[in-house]
Length: 257
Ligand SMILES: NC(=O)c1ccc[n+]([C@@H]2O[C@H](COP(=O)([O-])OP(=O)(O)OC[C@H]3O[C@@H](n4cnc5c(N)ncnc54)[C@H](OP(=O)(O)O)[C@@H]3O)[C@@H](O)[C@H]2O)c1
Image (cartoon, rainbow, N blue to C red; front, side, top):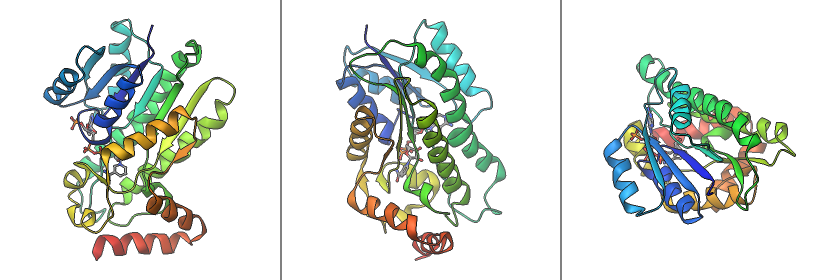
């Protein structure tokens, strides 16, 4: 039997590319997002590869439990969970609608945490395959410093990184891998959703395919943290030694300039 990878946010960008890579590596897929039409198109593209489509709005409280139950009702188990769904919002914290920011916390933090909780127990009991089992969480280079004008988004990604690194230690020796992918600016719908196209224009963006490939390879090699691209790696390295106030000033400058 093939192990199964569940990928959230598979309808576009990095998640769409992950789907193609994990399918090629032999994993059966469960693809998740709100846009059913895009998921159907992706399934068609993957030909006769085993793909289950589950539509779910992860911004709704209780969505992760609901998704877990749907997977169980289908009699399926998940050997790899890819928590990729996420979005950002650009603007002054007090001006951005609190409801939208709450939805962001729900998708970027709550759903990711709850999905990991539900699927991890099953994953620990799953047999070992010749390809790894575990969790691949998508954070961001935003995890390494505070981000004025995207304060909640940056903080949400810092949470993802810290949470995932703690699990690496908890799960040592269990055969369950936990990797965190920290992309920098990537060519996807992210910036238009965040109303932050002005930032994208000033960044050295990578393709979604290259970012997903780095994440996939990092995960199969059991890497703890994967930062794709030399520029992003250098930025993350510098952030370690920089006062956090300087990091915040630089992020603010990039937004304003
Ligand atoms: N692009 C970048 O520069 C960049 C940099 C660092 C990190 N990231 C992270 O990479 C991940 C993927 O983003 P992307 O760049 O590929 O952007 P994207 O093209 O906008 O893709 C976002 C994915 O998340 C899904 N999603 C959003 N809200 C959702 C919800 N409420 N319920 C279920 N699914 C939802 C979307 O599907 P539907 O709309 O169909 O629901 C879509 O498949 C995110 O976690 C993002 O924070 C991106």
